[in-house]
Length: 289
Image (cartoon, rainbow, N blue to C red; front, side, top):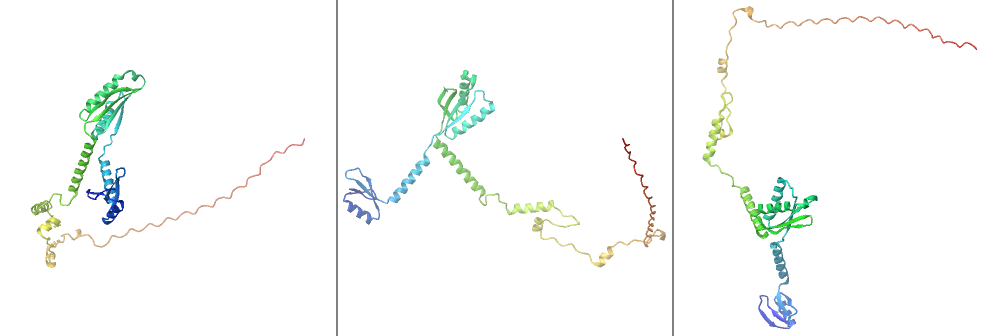
């Protein structure tokens, strides 16, 4: 067989036993890559690594593969303006995502005799989305329906790349906003100004000289109110003069309590008379026949 080295170099035509011995010495696998050639071609390689790399290449190919999807939107010839705006928004979203759009006009009953209504509606829709897609298939009648196909101007791979880039930018912006230290910082001078403003706006009253925590942090703890000495407190107590008229002085003795009224005696009820017995009723006797 023709043997190829692990780096792609040509070893030459050797026997199978020699190729197997070379593979065992290099701790590699002997893989037949071209069995139909004359003579067959074999290569020294790490077969497990080769399979892994082939699987990764297939995965990347599937990731970048573009699957063309045709979206469908159904309309009626007498569609309401608001419903038409909603359907047009769906068509714009599909074209922005890189998908084709199949627009179907459904006719019912006597509407089939007015195909020009559906043609005008499709032309209007194509003009409204001219910046996002083009008409790939012109309007044509298919039984009761009229069909038109719109193709996007941008490829789906480009649309997916744009969406992926936007998601990455949003993720970076979210991470930057949530990282520590990203908020506004306050300097020491600004903090001192805020403390002075707070102490000026919250002036303590004379009766309760309590300072705010910010003002206390800036000016120090408030001094405790001094308690006057007992002699001074006694001196400050105002004295009242005795009235000139002693009669005006109210008596200090308590007022007498009112005497409680005696409970009235209840009258003794008179005994009830005994009931009079009633006379027995007379029954009429039947005269003898």
